[in-house]
Amino acid sequence: MLDVSSKQQVKEIFTSLQASYELAVKVSSQHESRGELLELLGDVSECSARISLTVAEGEGLEFSLLQDGRDLGVKFRGTPNGHEFTSLLMALLNADGMGKNIPDDAVCRRVRALGGVIRLTTYVSLTCTNCPDVVQALNLMAILNANIMHEMVDGAINQEEADAMKIQAVPSVFADGELLHVGKSSFGELLEKLEAKYGSNVEALVYEVRRSDVIVVGGGPAGSAAAIYSARKGLKVVVLAERAGGQVRETVGIENLISVLSTTGEALASNLKRHVESYAVDMLEHRRVEKVEIDGPDKVVSVAGGERFVARALIIATGASWRRLNVPGETEYIGRGVAFCPHCDGPFYRDKHVAVVGGGNSGIEAAIDLAGICAEVTVLEFMDELKADSILQQKAKAQANIEIFTASQTLEVAGDGSRVTGMRVKNRHTDEERLIGLDGVFVQIGLIPNSAVFRDIVDTNRIGEIEIDAHCRTGRPGIYAAGDVSTVPFKQIVIAMGEGAKAALSAFEDRMRGII
Image 1 (cartoon, rainbow, N blue to C red):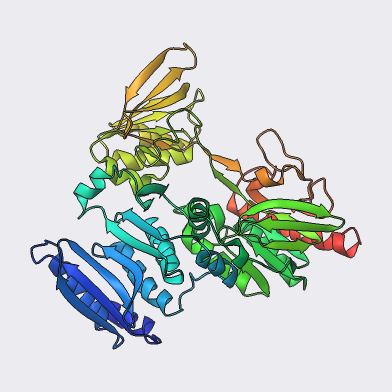
Image 2: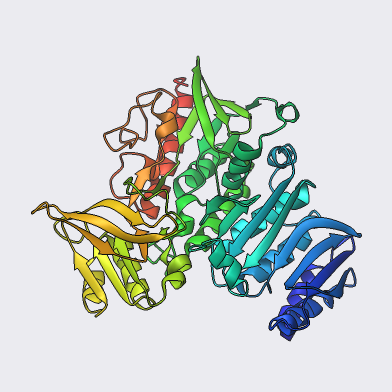
């Protein structure tokens, strides 16, 4: 199954393995995917003398990972092809203490401090680009904490089970049988949800206060630029980010970053992280700021998990997040008909009728993509005209199975208790209400600034953007804001980078002048 080139790459990856690993398969002799699974795992085991393959008769199709005879708590119920092949490789590397996805010691301690015995199941699609991040994060948690067990389930070959669990979006994570999370996520977000559900041994989480010259909150284009410019001035810099790259990771294609003809959000995020880490910067991912306090000239930042950071200069570059409809039914049906990613969840609605709420670029792009999968796509835009670029509007209007309604206000997402059945909308001109029968809803209504935790210490405008002057200074000495979280016009990557650099230079200037 693995070609010669792929096998050679896997051999190189496994060269440094120290422990011995067993791929312990249990599979029915009648299972239609038996041959495919055994061929793939056989190829993997041939790539290292430290990996063996054992096969036993089972009722379905699954395999577990064992290290030196000990069950690691990681199981795959499916053949990890496609995007999930990386999840298998990463699980083996992580168990051996390798892999760039292993978090720093403070985060690992939080995982080990989780309370109770935890059984996690993640339903995936092998074509989903978001699923591997979730699978790899939870596999790693199982490896770090012997009380956690995690299994990946391929919904395609376990269709009856997926239907019984009412899976309509991937990845869908269940914790001891209860839905914990649906959709894209990060290691830090998943960890916080597990902490909220199972509790934590707080006595194990005692940290020293960490002091630096500059704290940058946010690891996207603005935060990365601020960190690099600060470090180049010889300052000690700490970056606190939920995930390196930030919102840019959700951008599929980027063609307007000057001097770069074309790239992707994932590639840019990786390059940003690599550039930041080329300097003496403490890049700390999986940190969500919970509180900011002012102690004389010091800014004290507390993050989830109990760590505290202190610096004279604080640069806020937290970007923005997808905006929600905030109507009845939306939250209840997330993962059961309400979705935010057409690329990942679109295939669940093949030959069905879906709505896209939002007539901007993201909404119309989503409608065009879904039109190739769904029987019918209804676009609902609140304003009187679409806001998308004219070329996108032309493409959408040329699709026979896309219908567009403007001046449409979403009032409610309707469902039967298990899945979405429609949406109630109102014509803003006539006040006429109607119920549109639907199988799914994709929300694409723009972004909201991630400024909530800072609103007690800096001024924000009506929509939550942090108010700044032309130098990225807020009204509070020593606190700066840059990028999409601020009032700077035009939310673009290239602008955010420039604003991050400007904020860092302003902070350095204030330091030299004795202001901070």
